[in-house]
Length: 295
Image 1 (tube, rainbow, N blue to C red):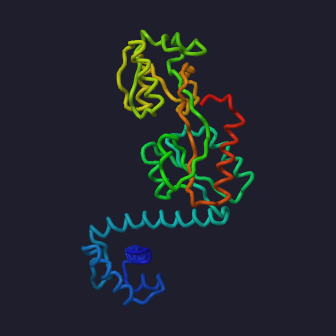
Image 2: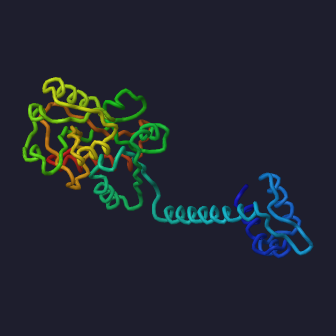
Image 3: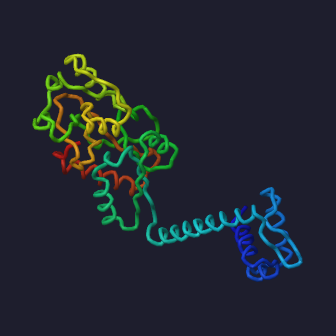
């Protein structure tokens, strides 16, 4: 079924008459009759009941016409949006990241890109589990990733961005939140959440803390679950700084350890567009100028 056939059905439903509908559509009545017959054969049910008085919708036809009206509206809106985009921008750069907080300076970089290249758009995407796969399939031009996850992938180029430190996340009124730096011994009598989608360096720190302090621990499946447990007094969690959304709802205190999580931007090796490289450079510059920003 194509959009013209959709319009044929909707127009005939409104007029209830093949001749009047054909006039509105600027086609012949036999052409309209034939197209409706072809369409009914395609969908497998009668859309209209024919009579000497004209054509009326069957119950199934009424359902179909309602849906087709919504579909046509969405298609027209999509075309209009595309036309507006094409009139303003000559290119769109798509960037994917696992979570909004991962690239805290993305909005700032987008504004800078808009100032320097007003005819280029940047569209962000968010996908924790399938972002890299979508990037490799060509659905995105740039991908935020952890270096250990992508270092061995061929045909991509890595651009260093920042090394994310590890923090202890607690409630604001937790005694540990009053410290400037958390040590392993500070966690000896506490309950620590481990597991989830933790990166290699973080898992290493978790294991070392549990082994050296003998602290209580339990598994948490995700960062959001861990924050929920922190808020409900069930435990505390070690987390990479890139997960901090900077809302001030929790205390993020630096943890004393040498491990960091190197974060990079990935581009396709065959993509030599200057616009993509310019945007990568803008993002890198945002983090380079603000080295004291907690990540």
